[in-house]
Image (cartoon, rainbow, N blue to C red; front, side, top):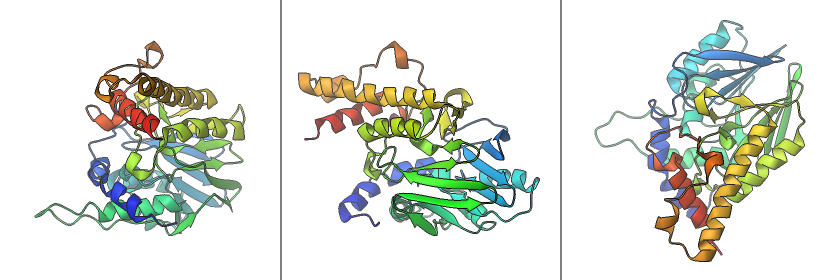
Length: 310
């Protein structure tokens, strides 16, 4: 699926933010790299940027998301300490730089990179819309997915089945939910900001309403024992259960409920964004402090705009 001209113009307006997401100083996680064993060959790697998922199965190796070039190398070195096997598959859960800037490092050791078709298109459009500044050294050539899907995708890799599903617009218009079926582990990418003010990427087709709904659908599609990997988490907590997905869904629903009430009452937008969602969500933090795109005020504003649409 290709983006329309209108979508491209909107995407171009987020180019500066995309550049920020590629900045190695942002979206920090623990300073020391860790590969945490979860279950049945599935692990999570945290260093900087979006959490990486790793499947080291019998006769199979899969990596979900790639962070940045330097952290992808750290992750790959950790994997190489365990196996010299070619990576069967790299998955990009979506197009943002803190999840895809290490693609080039992993692609050299991988057979394929797969993503939702919208994610692949957004990677190309945002890269084209953010050329290097005058006098700056040329940026590394991005490495894009070479396989895409539109609704669902599944493949048996070793003794594990890896399944990707698109639930519609949420954090962006191209987010994949990645399920390791035998392990019963699900990588959510940035559809999950655990106890954080998640980024609603409106220029890339985000929808707060559908995002809240799809989290509930993901929970219904899995069981009580399912373990979830989150893109980002408060205090570095990047794994959890269905209750965490429902909690973040409630946060998104609270944004829209407050926004609809404000629009109905005629509350001005600039006044509404100064408000709060009450004590329940008071401990939510920002993955990028002092950036309005990762703040309660920013999300209230985007909710207000979504609620104002006819």
